[in-house]
Length: 219
Length: 248
Image 1 (cartoon, rainbow over the protein chains, first blue to last red):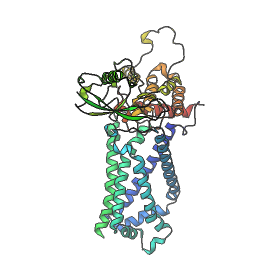
Image 2: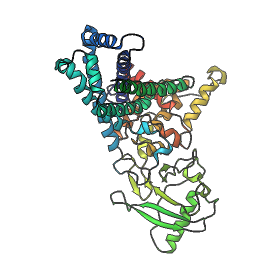
Image 3: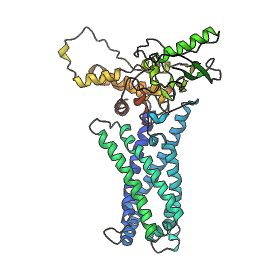
Image 4: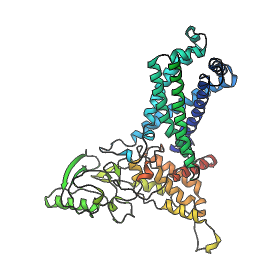
């Protein structure tokens, strides 16, 4: 009667959890390289361009780029599939429901925040990845200049900051949820995981946003 | 106390249901929720109308028969109680109260507020037992069990199978129920014997019954009248993965 590991409901949870944690490692590296551009302890332009060049040319990163794309695809497709299945599990909805009494907003809105992040990802890939990879930066001298060009436009800065807040909300549930799914629930460590989850989502949302705003007000 | 009740009425499993409004007057604050519904049904009997069907049995909060989704929460607004142990003093005079059946495709409505929760029984039948002969009672000290483990097994065994976890979950997932049934055995040496087979079979049955997938919102443990913790879900996930990786 035993089914394949990843075909059952718990197996699918594991896939969401592991792919999510993998994407989190990407976010950490991304935030770190973005922070280079602030020029806090070195020339921001040189450091950011060097970091960006490393990410674009290092053979290991080149391979990981495909793994990352796969991670995104798995996480997105599985997330959408799970949501469709979960909605179908209750076809007649409650006429009067009070979910705020028992669960957090972020835990209930994962698909909404997830789709918003996906839309942002499309915009972000168009703004940076495609410009760098296929459009020779649209004539700009370096990656740093592209960053300045994008973050000089109020509409883009606004959209990016909104996306970072949404990402923070998504991560607030996603981070701690990943541990629960993997069975890592322990009285001693739960408060640490919860605390790390809140801290991490704030660092991500505030970190990315402040970098965008820093360049917007500095240009 | 007076109340306006908006109650889900549905003739049978296939009929289309709707929310109907009823008024009850002069209800004592010490009346239980089910007694309040009894009083309403008495009114309906006197008027020659069809009474409202709802599940109930022990009315002592231990059998898991009563259900009801009251004002948007399973077993009503009070935590750690079943509907039968909910008293009208938990509401304000003149309040409008919405009463709906536990909703999930795996819990089809039979009539009005009564739903078929036999899906939970079938999950239990898929592995929620031990099948070996225990023989006569062994010497009590021959099999030492840590007090904490015995207590944790008992905490899980407190699940009365009411289905509030499913009703509350935005995904209609039965993970809390199944995890309690898996954990009550997993903590004890007798349960470890068939642990791998048990978790695989019970989870497979859970998936077959059409419950949704858990997304760790934690709503189930908040609404569970017996306070079953989602740490049992984490434990079941561990048990399931270990069993899946090692089973043949």
